[in-house]
Length: 245
Image 1 (tube, rainbow, N blue to C red):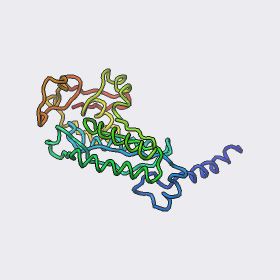
Image 2: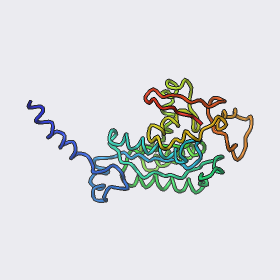
Image 3: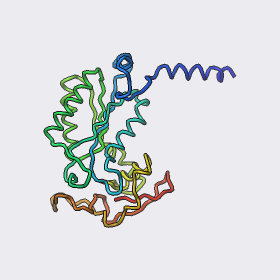
Image 4: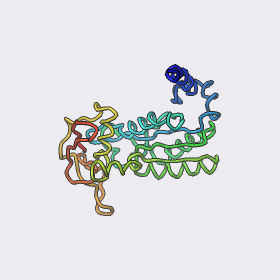
């Protein structure tokens, strides 16, 4: 009985030890000063891009890392920096609604963002990246440079690569662009963002072997997965059908 009476008090103490928000865009500057870096030394920076993703939303590369940041911030005692939504898209930039930032501009901007986070007092800068290709290499290089210059710890994580073991266990093979893993994850975040009614087998094709062929723009009905034919599958956590494209 005594333990039950103490529970509300313990919960109120825990609540008092948390900032009002972990979103850097929502917190007041005075509260931010009270927490960083005295009580919070870690920041999560979501990065992505806008590009076609089969039957998923064009911002799938944004949706995924932002949701991951929201879910893990309190667990690792971190703040969440505003997402950087534009990236180095590559060969899919010809699709409707897709954007690509030039490497020179992207390098300069991201370098300033990372250095700004270090100057705010964060000692651990974690980049939750939602887009691969050349963007990953750029982020890796910039994060390492900022870490050396400002004597902070940096980490760049491609979310789909970090959880590839789960993808293999669930689907029997690794994922790909707008493939089973990404489609399932986006549907788990918000089912409205996966437009199953627009799916057809013509949307899918295997990723070409290295050195075999290259085309620009990538064929309008081509999205990389690891099998030649897309398949509708059921996840273990949901009874809904997921069409990978």
